[in-house]
Amino acid sequence: MKFTLSSAWPFFLVPFVVLLDQWTKWRVLDEPRFNALGCLDGVELCGRIVLPGPLDFTMLWNRGMSYGLFQSEGIGRWILAAIMLAIAVGFVVWLVRAEGRWLKLALALVIGGAFGNLIDRVRFGAVVDFIDANGLYFPWVFNVADAAISVGALLLFVDQFLLSRPKQATSV
Image (cartoon, rainbow, N blue to C red; front, side, top):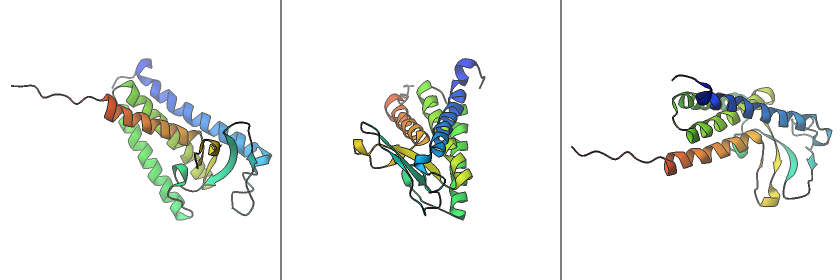
């Protein structure tokens, strides 16, 4: 695959997602009302900022994967991190070989989100979650990386099952 600016854009999107995710998490960690580092061990309560409208900011440490699946601590933290890294690397290989802008967009979002959450897992043993959409009847607290992974997964589904047309066999 020959890289040109027009074909390399997904590789610029990946670090953009990671940086946006880490910047928002840095803002949360830096906000005293969240008591983020104080509540990391689970002894103290994390904080919350109520906003007008359906969204609030609620600090939570997620020791699992996206939306709290597969909670783990201790050695499980490192096993989960290794699995997340392996999946992200697999998606990078897929992205290098990918054709089509929707597929590339989907993969770049998933990869950026995976690396954003992986950074937290390695640094803290848990992922910073803070976007609370309970006012929209969405029960999970999530972050920018989770949102990127979810949107990427949805686009991947759309690309693979709705936009991709099966090749018709030609008659001999």
